Length: 180
Image (cartoon, rainbow, N blue to C red):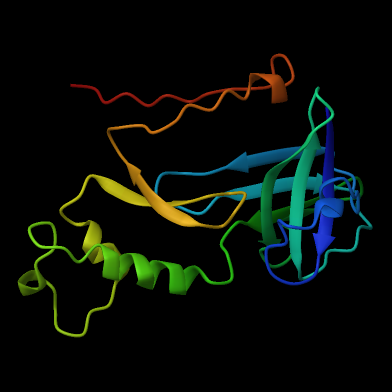
């Protein structure tokens, strides 16, 4: 499996197929993570003299069927996290440019009786999270499209099989259990 990293000018360029197989940077190590209710982050170890642009980036791969798939798209968060003679560690955020607008739209959609009561919200408070108070859902940011949706904490909607994208013995999982 080949992984590609390409810099792209402008907003979330999913509709430009050339960006999926363009390699602007070599990636030595890649970690993509996302927690419940948070935007996905990607950490990449790249060559030490790489040019880090302040633009959108796409991380994609070529699978076994010779198809290109987006793994992540986002923009750099400030300076490299780590700098040494062999590598730079950069961090990218999948938060889209229109994040605030998407949350405001969701906030309006969530204002439905029984699950939302303005009596318990301070006047003038426009926090989109208030619409989630009586729900078992959190906002979910898609790491590839940047679109926000709702993710139910107790009921899954899909299962993703990543086994074909993971090299043997490189995947680890951490499970936290509450002691009684």
